[in-house]
Length: 277
Length: 277
Image 1 (cartoon, rainbow over the protein chains, first blue to last red):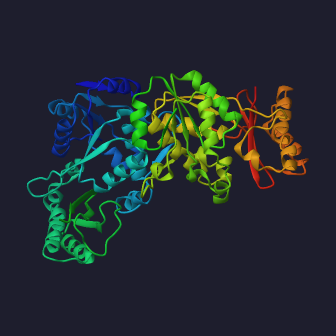
Image 2 (cartoon, one colour):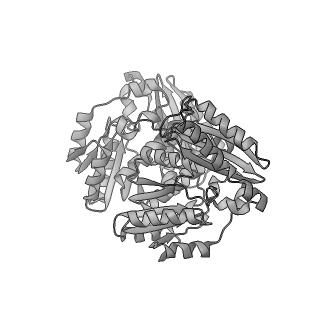
Image 3 (cartoon, each protein chain N blue to C red):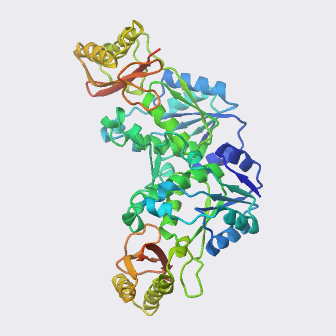
C-alpha cells in the first residue's frame, strides 16, 4: 500500500494504476461503515484508492472540527486490511493552496435540510469532493447511504461538472440495536448511546406506517416527531420526506422517497435516513 | 478536423489524442485575436482542440447574449485554417444537463472590477471553464491578455481545483489605431469605431506617465479618467491599477501591475488593459 501526500505525486501514481480505478473518501475515524465501503470499492475496481483528509471547509462549527476523532495510524491499518492500493493523504495546504478562494456551490440542494442547519457545509463538501475527483480521476466512487444529502450533492456536482465517474451507494451499516454507524457515535455518553437507537426506530416505525398504507407525508413526519419527542435525551432538529433526487419535500410519500432526520443527543448531532419501499 | 458535439464523444476522442494537448476556448465570432491564440496553441500542442460554445451563464445581460454576433460556419473555417484537430461544439443542454444547479464561484476576485458591473459574470465563466477543462483535460490552455480578470479567475480556479493544466497568455491583438480586437467591436457605429481607440490611448498615456516616473496609482487613474473624459462618445465605467494576481487596487504602481478599464461607447461595452513595465 502506497501513501501519497501531494497532488502531483498522486496524479503520477494514478496514471499508472490499472483500470477501473475505484475510490472511497473519508474524513478518518473509520468504522465498520467505512469498511463496507472499502469492500464494495475493492470489488468494483482493479485498483482501489482511498483518500484520507479531514476537510476543514465542511465544518460549519470549528468546535465540531476540533473534537472530530482522528486516528490516522488506525485508519491506515484498516485501509491495508481491506486491500487499498493507494492512500491519498494530503495536507490542508496541498488541497487549499495559498490564496485559494474558489468554491463549488451545489445550488439550492445545498441550502436545505442539513444545509439549513449547517451553513456552508455543502459548499465545503462540494469543493473538496470536486478537488478529490479531479486529482484521483476515479472510474467509480463509493459512498455511504447514511449521508443521503451529501450523496445528492455529489451526484449533482459530478453530473453538472461533466465528470466521468460512476457513483455507487452502499447501504448504511448499523449496530445490532439499529444505530447507524458514525464517527460521531464515539462522543455519546453511555446514557446517550443507550437512547440513540430511537432515531432509527422512529424512522422504521414511520416506514411501517407507509408500508401499512399511510400516504400523507405529514403523517409520516408526525410519527417521527412523536416517537423522538417521547425520548428524554434526543432533540429532533428536522424530519423530512423528500424526493430522493432533488430533496424537495413531498406532500405524499412515494416509493424511493427519502425519509430522513437529524437530532441532537447532548452535544452530539446525528443523522439517519431510510428509503420508502 | 473533427467536430464533436457531446461530452461523451469528446472524452473518447480526447483519450486518443497525441500529447501534449493544447486548447483554446471561444464564444465564437472569431477575429484575429482568436487566430493569434490558435497559432500559439498550435505551437504548444501535439494536438489542438478548440471549444466553440456561446455560454449563456456568463452573460449577466440577456440582451447582450441575444445580440452577441455568431457565425459558426466562419468560425469553423478559421479553426480549419489554423490547424485545429478537434472542435468541441456542444449544445447548451450538453454543458448544462437537466436540473443543473452546480456553480463554481471564484471568490472575491470575481466580484470586483468587471464582476462589480456584471453580477454573476465570473461565476458563469468559472463554471463553464471548469466543465471545459474537465472534459478536454488539456495539458496547455491559451487565453488572450485582453480578458485580464477572466485570466486571473481561470488561473485561480484551476490552481484551487488542482487541475494539471498550464495556462499561456497571448498578448492582445490590436487594430492599427490601437483598438483591442473584440467580437463586440462589430457593434460600434462608424462614429463610435472612430472614437474607440481613445481607450488604448488613455492607457498608453498613463503608462507613459509611469515610465516617466509617476508612482502614485491615483495619478495614473486620474490621467485615464481625464483622457477618456475628453471624449464625446466614450463613457468610462472604471479604471484600475491593481496587483496582477489578486486584482487588489494599489496605492503605488509597480512593475507587472495591471492598468485596466471598461468603457461604454453607445450601447457597446469595451474593456482593455496594459501592464506596467
